[in-house]
Length: 265
Image (cartoon, rainbow, N blue to C red; front, side, top):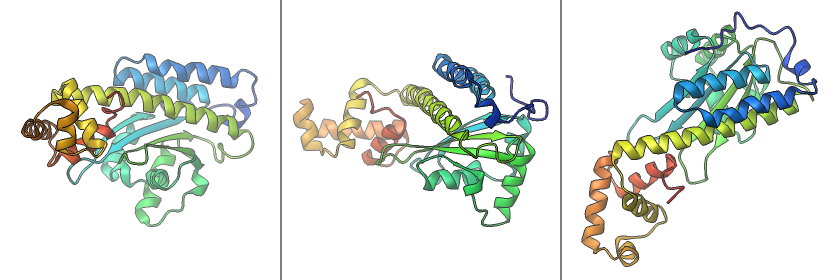
């Protein structure tokens, strides 16, 4: 799988200078729209790499975190950067504890490294490690989910130049970064939804039941809507809970919603 090596892709011009080119946005968008053609995660990573280069960045990281019915969330990350960064970051601490992710949790619009205030030694170490691997300056793009969905996504673009995401020229870069984050969100939602549905062996009727639970309907109301007896409704939810590894139907519906399973229900 090909990855960006920041030690061999130092750009002759900054992102801000590249953004002044008349064909800059068109070329970057052309790379971004190709993401939806990816057939699997390795292909998606390859297209993320191409889009990162087209934007003019040195490196990028995209992470999805979905809390589960347990202590640890499920995380799906794409590291379009030097492979050493993923390894060292994993040895250092979970990416969810990174200052970038703390920014994404508390903001709905993109921000740069200038808006990050390290709070303790671990923060300084995490930011120093990122600088080593092509994130001397960075743009963090939160991708908020729906108000009721306990899910968080973040795109971080890095540059091997200081302050490369500052100034008026960076406006077009932010717009492109938002588009890239949106395409990644759409692709990963489809992928995670399909993977969960296949792993849990959920039928269309199961998804319909979960959607009604997510809407706040009780067994009696679901019974009236579906024609099933209340006992059958409860029995089906017990089976669904077991397949989704959740302790309750509420938790099952929450998990299904976070994975995008209910968006087509």
